[in-house]
Image (cartoon, rainbow, N blue to C red; front, top):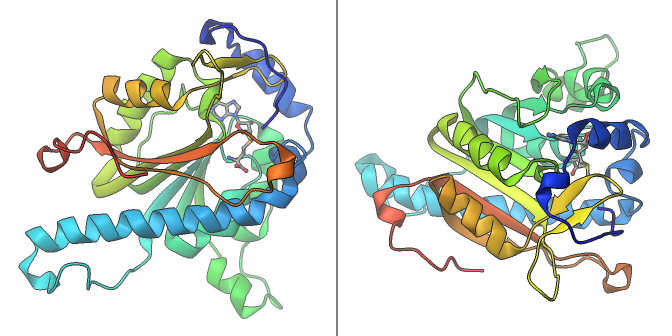
Length: 272
Ligand SMILES: C[S@@+](CC[C@H](N)C(=O)[O-])C[C@H]1O[C@@H](n2cnc3c(N)ncnc32)[C@H](O)[C@@H]1O
């Protein structure tokens, strides 16, 4: 979320420096959001709306191939079986959004002190006398916690949803391309891969290297090229609206991706 930048390519990315930066950040929502904790609620609501739209698209596809589904889009939305919160930090997204849409969530996060917050938190808490009904309902939500960067994560489960937010800028283009391929292979038949990231607004249309947190902020065009290179189909892209203008934040875009499928091959300009 940092806004201090210089223009250099993604070859500047150095994982050790990025981890040093994140280890120096507080394990709080403020630390996760670079000093803008007030955008968290709007962001989480926007993510829930985006996912609901995607699930409607997928349900229509399922209904078309499933004669028991009845009228297109009439199927009831159930919780997804397993989701992944990638580059999860302290679990802000799992806590504020994924818990409402997934039965189980796995977490991928390279910084141990952030993962520790999730491990010791409410979402993985064991049943104890005195816990409220709401707490018991969440018991066991987080199952696996992988302490690693996405460039090294080899999924061993199948996921209905793999959510990546404000973290893939720590991967080079080639790492991101191969990571997306691995993640796509770990999706269930109707699974969805989502990236929600800042977009570069460089007037020359370049990706921007951020020397503060050691990440690259990509243009919308760069993301779409990487998705294509990874063999993925972009089924929907949408800009997050509603962040207070005076904060001067970069545009944030959500991308929903699936492995290339014949029925989507004609979609070359996804609806915004
Ligand atoms: C801006 S925070 C976002 C955290 C969380 N996604 C959220 O939105 O609250 C960036 C996170 O990316 C993590 N990160 C850094 N390098 C990473 C890598 N190579 N792979 C995955 N995550 C990484 C950081 O440790 C940090 O938790």
